[in-house]
Image 1 (cartoon, rainbow, N blue to C red):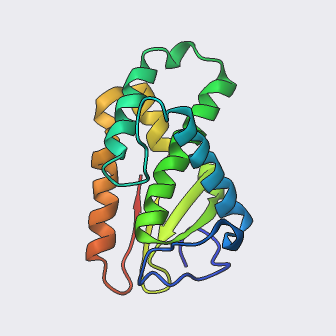
Image 2: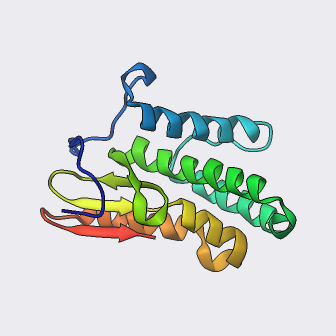
Length: 162
């Protein structure tokens, strides 16, 4: 068993294109938070949940890193949740999968491929790292690692991208 609960198994053969009325509560919360991120930057960027849009997210995080250290903790947490949810939703909308709560990391984790394989993505820590460490925690590079593992996964493979 992986690091998380297996409440529901998802068919990973094709990405999920679900209507919001069909989403479980956790997925709906993540989707709503990601949509709020899109709305916040709609005048500056076309955040369309494509893998390419993660380049724009990385640019926004680069800009935010200049003032991130002075932000109140609540604002930091909100920024991490907003951008992290967007990254998760790019994964869900392009590759399918399911959200779980990762107790050990006290944050969501997104898992693609169940039941055949489990490629997991932890985005909140990566967003925090990008804000604190700069370009060494590049978001497109991080997501490319996830994409590569999902696209090349074989039955029984397990990996966590952090």
